[in-house]
Length: 56
Image (cartoon, rainbow, N blue to C red; front, side):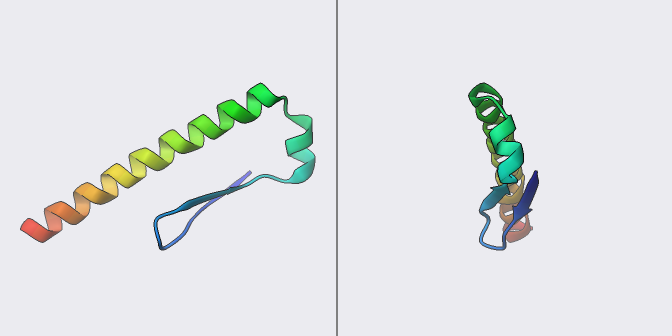
């Protein structure tokens, strides 16, 4: 699995087709949840950094 952060703030998760086929639906769903939580956390931290930089 490869997760890449792009400059526009979007997160792209690329999973090899072979690995995707070997996963059950439940595992894929769980993986998606973990990635979304990580992204939201990063986005939140990034937003706070911008706010603190603007007001200092």
